[in-house]
Image 1 (cartoon, rainbow, N blue to C red):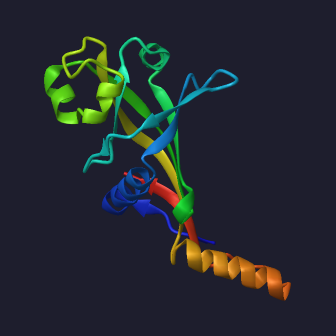
Image 2: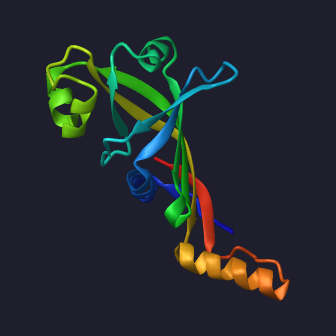
Length: 168
């Protein structure tokens, strides 16, 4: 596996690609406690600045925890393409109509009585430290490489994989 650290525009592109491909992450709060509080969350979007956006209930534990400590950790997995992303960042909560209107998804109706539901809030996570794991050639090529190594008895050099920091 090779290391390729990415910066600014390349980093934003990789964060956007991997997070939007996976869509669902484990969203962790209260990073100082053990065990860390985590729950699955669906990503609404990763914007052109690399910020990650989520819809959340203003009465959820995660929102209360973010008000006490803005540090969060997100873990994205896209197993079908062997892509993984870890994002440590600072979360901010928005309750204003303009942000809710901009980030709203019709799927959120499963949890809320529409955009005007007083419990709707939007969470923005600004990445501070990000690390990714990806395949250069895709999962099938990686799988072929592993199978070939297993059959021949040789160890794979995992040369089709790439990992690194993605620093905005």
